[in-house]
Figure 1 (cartoon, rainbow, N blue to C red):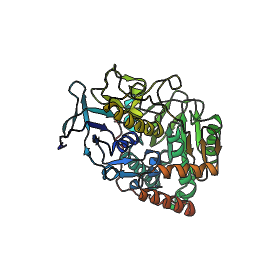
Figure 2 (cartoon, rainbow, N blue to C red):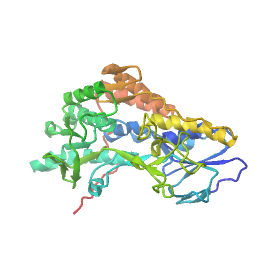
Figure 3 (cartoon, rainbow, N blue to C red):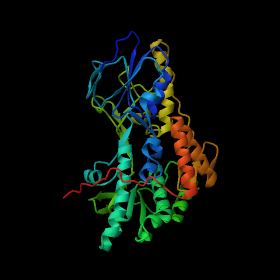
Figure 4 (spheres, rainbow, N blue to C red):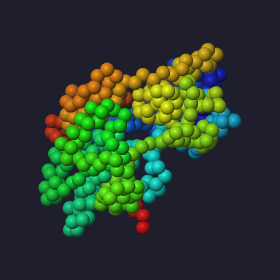
Length: 427
């Protein structure tokens, strides 16, 4: 990999997400050598992926080069690599570009879509965890409307304009709201010769409420907002199969649709070598102690979505969201320096800063530790927080200008089929 040999301890970080970047920044000017490995050369701001999928933003607005983030930091090295295995005995990571020894390893590989073992749903539905997946979904949505114009088969046309989102968490709710805004303000102008009133947007939620984990008031208000946008919400319904044409549920409900977006859950993106039962716990996550150490391996750590830190307050581990990942990255940076200096490490304590979700134009719900509010003010708070956490001045400006333009013109100009997407249906 052409990483220089140094007298400084070598810390290898796997993953350039929120946790990995936070840790790298914390260690950036210390007397350690930091090597960050990721299969992409950019950091992806996942909370705004749904806006790429629905034409509100271009992908370069929410992505930022990893090398640029850490370009001024001494003793930092980035390598574009896919980590294939971790050799815990030889302190070595094995990648598609070679092997690398480490003194300390931090796994921040994040999460991936959880299909709960259903291979047919995995093959035929759309995920939205990465920028390529978001672009695929954008292309498919637009291609469906183009195809709906051409077909004379009413059932086929309805299926092309029927969207099913599985999962009523923040991702599903925000995507549904964005699609509803497109139906209301954009499709009638783009497709005047198509009866866009036939567009159906459905959220299927397995529990009795959407935005589970937020307050009851936030959940109910989000449901009210979505219903005003003519989004159909199906609660206490679980999807059991999707063959590319028909959604089967555990009830009498079925949906004929060409587009299913799977937002029903995530699981840890484990790596061979740390995927044995002795390391893995609920949600396919790596079990760690209060210092983010992988249990049984003192020189290997895990942070972010991949890490499961169990406690009385969080028996299933911390929420798989950006804030716990960022906080763990910062804390581990301090702890690793203390460990190198042979000082006792400090246990991690999560500070819950709240949760939020937007449901289209002027509509959002915000749960803060001491305040809970909904509506227009919550929408402004949501925008400010997301702009603040975007990396790079250019990205903040581009996203802000796009939001202002889209708000004033009621438009989404990134409705481009740059890379056509064709579903490979099971025969």
